[in-house]
Every structure is written in structure tokens, then in C-alpha cells.
Length: 228
View 1: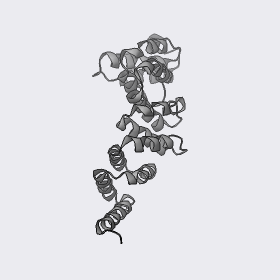
View 2: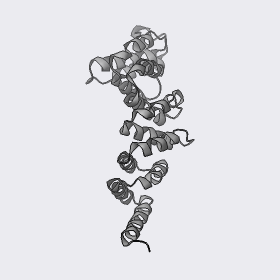
View 3: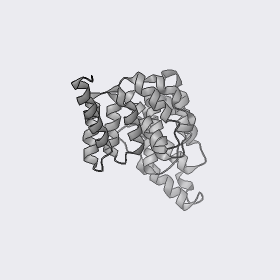
View 4: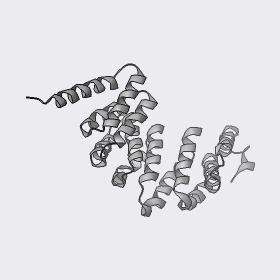
């Protein structure tokens, strides 16, 4: 005979699972909160799979919170497997969740291909996860890898990259110096903006990024007076 408590729990879980797929995002948000509050390891697959298809940012963040409430020995291997997914949202959300869990055992899964992912959101998530998970002895190597992408993307992407680099601290100085010697004005200006942010965390990086875009728009000849 099935215990009454078990039957009630199974019924409650079924209702929560249905609510996670509801059409109303507020209902999904409350369901994710409830799942995280109960922290049932048996729901890890459901949470990870929902992260892949959930369209609402706030619900995804609640799903991440729910996953952080579960034992890392269960969640980390499951999330590492998602990093090989062909779905960009699956990779991005798994990286985001790994950064929130902060378990250093996930570091080997933060590959160069993820750090250079063609999808900007995946790359941004990889940068944030990398600076959280990187071992002390590999910070300089990570700095060089991230600095190699200076000049990439739009303002939001460049701001994310600058913040990731600055989070590594003074070890980024040599990599920034190399980038500032670049013949590419966008790379040069982005590196200079990142250096300024390192020295003054309250400084915004947009002016130098805007300067780089202006140089590109004008052409190298007309932008000669703004070289690094």
C-alpha cells in the first residue's frame, strides 16, 4: 500500500511540474520558487530541461536559484553535460548556473570553444563563469584568452568582457599591454577602457568604446590622432 504522505507528495510534485510549463510567467515563477524551496534532488533533470526552453529571464533566474539549492555533486555533472548542447540557451544557462554554484570542479568544462562561442550570450556567460571558477594558477592564462577577444561585439558585449577581465585583477596588465599595441583601433580602445576600469572601478568604459567605433567609422587615416 502506498503511504498517504507519498501519494500527497507525488500529487504536489505533479502540480509543480505542470505549473513550470504554464502559459503565465508569474505561475512559472512561483512554481520555480516552490521547487527551490522544497529542494528535491529528484527534480534536477526537470529544472535543467526547463532552463533550455524557458523564455522569461526572471523565471530562468529562479530556476537557477532552485538548482543552487540542490547538492553540487548532483547538479554540476548534469550542468556540465549541458555545455555540449547544440542549443545556445542550454549552454548559456548552464554556464550561468555553474557560476552561481561556484564549484571549482566545473573549471575543466569551461573550454576555449565556450569562451569564444559564436553566440554572444553564451560567450558572456562563459566569461563570467570562468572568472569565478578559475584556479589561482591559471588566472594569467585566462586573462590572455579573454584579452584576445578585446574589440568583440557591441557595447554590451564589450562591457561584459571588460568586467570579466577586471575581476581577474592585476594579472591582466600584460595582456592589456599587448592589446593596446594592436594595430586595430577598436581592440586598442577597448583595452585602454578596460585598463581604466581596472584602475578606477567606478569609471565607465563606454567613452573609449565609442571612440573606437568613431575611428572605425572615419577610417584609419582620419583617426590617426587618436592612436593609443
